[in-house]
Length: 400
Image (tube, rainbow, N blue to C red; front, side, top):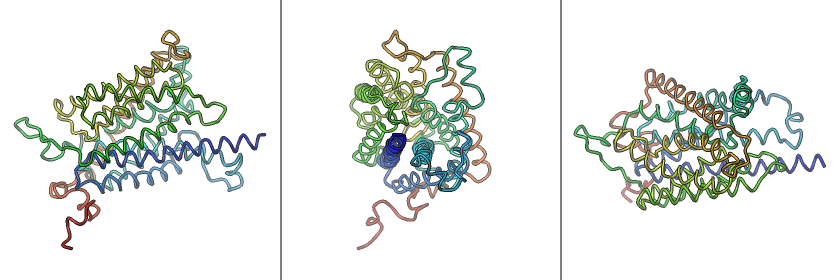
């Protein structure tokens, strides 16, 4: 029976890892559909190579920082319990690799390729696992302090804060240090529209992400005996709430419509195992509104050229999710309880602080030393030709 349980758990978490791996295709196509045609190849290559660099950084450094586990034993030891610990690494790697995938959308169309790979290695190797270990492995006694002070630990079931808020708040200083795309804002205050290059690809990316998210959330249980359909239904309700609010607030704009469900899913990660489905619906609906309002504000008023709106989508909706778990997870709102609003608030603020300061330091140092932005001619020609020497539609450069 033990062998059967270990085999079933290994298969369960492997399927979760595969679903989240597929989400990285969603990140790629969401970015591809949003950027201009001259930057589509770069979007695809960045996500793939960032994932590869993340794997190396997390395997050799990050996983050990977070959980004190390394993989330098012999294969016989590693394959114990049907290799469950190996597949668990794969599963958690797909979470870690979401950090550079999130950032990629914010810095699109003008970031240099190789400096971003260095940032990816540092973030996935050191910054992300530092906070991940605090929350999910009780490192440094912070969770114990929160429990002693407020009666409950910081609860983040599937990473509203650990993954999404951290990714979004690292992206914010990166976007600000890069500056806006050339021609986006003029000195007289006018703004040049950079519409999505492909709504179908943008929609495809959002759908792939949404489907994979049910592996992201449901399979965060990690073992079959802990799986609960409540997580699946709450994820669905938050997705629907985010969609409807974004469509209404965004006045039927398809870019908002397809980011709305993602906003809801980001927000529900933390409390998906605690909330009543109606609480999840409200959480997602608020997140959809937050995304539309804050994306518009950052782009039009604050002149922060966050191309995919990753700070509003992941940074702010992720932070809202961390706090929302402390509200709608309470029994008075139909939740399961066992959660503290103040522990949720402090845990969320800690994640935001670590992410923002780390992003400021890493991208600030890279900007001062090697530079993080394409030069004006390279940016004008597009990252596809400047970095990869080919465009997404190569026939336009030929005379066949």
